[in-house]
Amino acid sequence: MGIFGNKEQINLSDPGEVAIAEHVASVIPDAGEYLLNLLGDFCNEQMYARLKVDVDSRRAPNGWVVPAKLTDVPPIGRKQTPMTFLNFFMGMRGTIALTVWGTSANRGKDYRALADVLSSILHDQGHAAAATWAIVARPEARPSLSPSHLAGALLDGWREDHQHLRNKDVIRAFRNWNK
Image 1: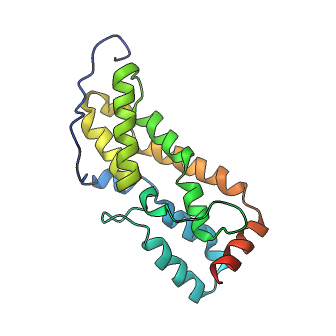
Image 2 (image 1 turned 45 degrees about the vertical axis):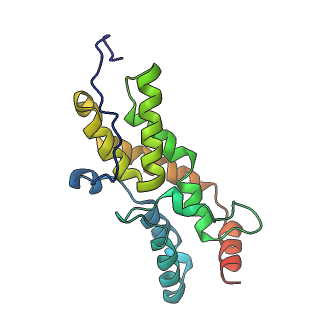
């Protein structure tokens, strides 16, 4: 349902492999690059190269880090590794930001269907693919679906999440990773 009661036309067909729009890819941040920038100060060149390889192994064919490739990552705790932080950044806060952004002004059945498709695309293809699909699937909502708003929400969430990390968390993660 639209804001003023008009039924919005939404294309909920199976998106398959989403081709990421250039204007979306240039704005939406990549969680893998965010992690590399964050942890780069803690690494020498050899460790950074190893970390980059590990992050790159978590990418979908479209080049974006996806939650589907983080299923083997241990949670925060005694067995955490640097990939635990990537999993932490890709967690619920990013999913919620994407869902709120992509389903704005929708409720009921449309909301649930949009949220399910967005979550599925995010899980398998990443933030940029889900954002591209939302813009294409909701042509009437394009003016309100600004990729820069989603980018800001994602970055703000990641910044807030990494403020909860303590030095000992990072040290423990690298120590476990080097075992």
